[in-house]
Length: 305
Ligand code: NAD
Image (cartoon, rainbow, N blue to C red; front, side, top):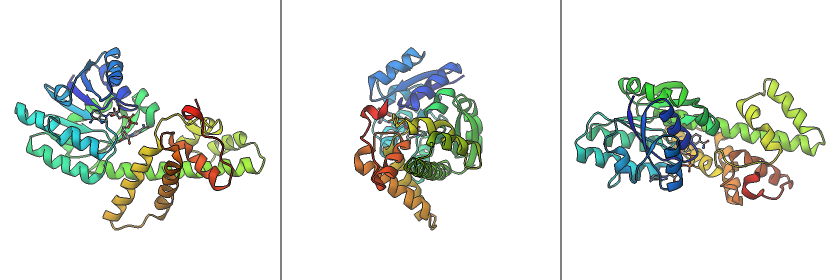
C-alpha cells in the first residue's frame, strides 16, 4: 500500500481519492477549495494545506485538475510537485496525471519530471462521475512500460480498464479521440430527440428502442432519461468538453489529419458555451440542437435539478 498525494479533489478527484483510501492507501489530498478536502477527511484521508504538503513524503503523486495551465502550475510552478521533490532530493516517485490536458503539455511535464527523477505517466480517464464513484474508470496511459506496471495497484483502485497506449502524451491523444466520439454521440442523440419531439412521437419510447438496437450506446443507456427531463446538472461541464474539443483539433493539426465531424461537433459545443450553457452538463448539447430549430426552452435553474 502506498503513501499517495492527490491534488485536485473536484467532481472526479474526490471519489477517486476516496476509492484509493478504500483500497488501503494513505491519501493526503489538496484542493483550492477547503470543502473538497473536508470530503476527503470524511472518507478517511488527510487534508494537505498545499501541493508541497501533499507531495512531501509521497511515493505516488496524482493530479486531477481542470486543464493544462492548472497542471503546469501545480506540477512545474514554484512550490509545486517537482520543486518539492527536487528540494527533498526524493527520486523514483511515481507521478500520475489523471487530468485531460494537451499531449504537448504532458510531454513537457514528462521531460521536467525526468530531471527530478520522477516516473511520469499521463493517465486521463473516461467513465464520468459515475465511473469515478464506482471505481470503474477506463484509463489510457502514456509513458514507460515499467512505470505503468509500477502504477497498476494504484490505477486498479480507481479503474477497471487500463491500457498503456504508447509513450508520454499518448494517453492524452486517446482521450482526445474518446472526447470527439462522446461529443458526436451527444450531438446526434440531441438531434434525435428534437426530431422525435417535433414530429409528435413518443420520444421516451423512441429512445428506449434506439438504446436496444444498433444505435445503442453508454450515453443512451445512462443519459436518455435525464436529457428528456432537461436535467443538466454536471457531470461533465460543457466548459470542459469545449477544452477537450480544442485539444482534439490541435492534436489533429499536429498529426496533419482532417477531422470534419470533430470540427462540427466542436462548433456546436462552442455555441452551447457562447449561449451561456458552459456550466451545464455536456448532455445540454440538446439545448443547442433545440435552439437551431427555434425550440429552445428556458435554461433550467441549477442545471435542472
Ligand atoms: P472539477 O472542476 O470538478 O475539479 C477540479 C478541481 O481542481 C477543483 O476542485 C479545483 O478547486 C481544483 N483545482 C484547480 N486548480 C488547482 C490547483 N492549482 N491546486 C489545487 N486544486 C486545484 O473538474 P472535474 O470534472 O473533476 O475534471 C477534472 C479533470 O478530469 C478535467 O481535466 C476533466 O476534463 C477530466 N474529466 C472529467 C470527467 C467528468 O465527468 N467530470 C470525466 C473524465 C475526465
